[in-house]
Image 1 (cartoon, rainbow, N blue to C red):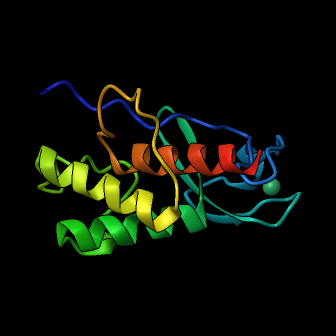
Image 2 (image 1 turned 60 degrees about the vertical axis):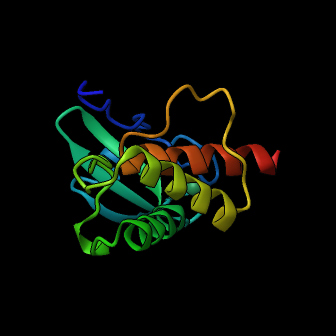
Image 3 (image 1 turned 30 degrees about the vertical axis):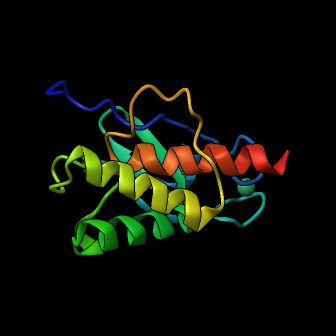
Amino acid sequence: MNAPASPPTINPNRCLHCDSDVPFDSQAPTSGVYPCPRCAFALWCFRQPDGLHVFQKDVADKTIAIVAKQLEVPAEQITPFATFDELGADSLAVVETTMELETAFDVTFPEDEDQPPQTVGEAIRLVEQCLAKKKR
Ligand SMILES: [Zn+2]
C-alpha cells in the first residue's frame, strides 16, 4: 500500500463537458479556472510537470466539499493531487467517502474497480466518468 499514487488521468486539450478538443495549452497557460472556449463550461486546470490536468469545476468543487466534510480537513487544503493518505484517511474512511460521493452525485462506481481512489483527483475522475456514462 506504500506505492506512490498514480496521478489522475491527464486530459490535455479536452473539455470534459462538451467532449471537444480545445486548445487548452494556449488558453490555460497556468493553473486556474477557465471557461471552455466552445461551451463556456467552467473547467479547472492544473499545470503539473507531466502536463495539464483538466477537471470539471462543478464536480471538483462538490467532490472536494464532500471529502473535506468526511475527513474533517479544510477544503482549501485539498487539491486533486492530495492523496487520501496525506489527508489522514484510513481505508475505511476512503470507502465511506466514496459512498458519500455516490449518494451525492447519484452514481454507482464500477464494482470492478479493484482498489478505491488513491487521490482526490482520482475520485473526481470516477465521478466524471460515471456522470458521462449516465448522459449517454
Ligand atoms: Zn466544452
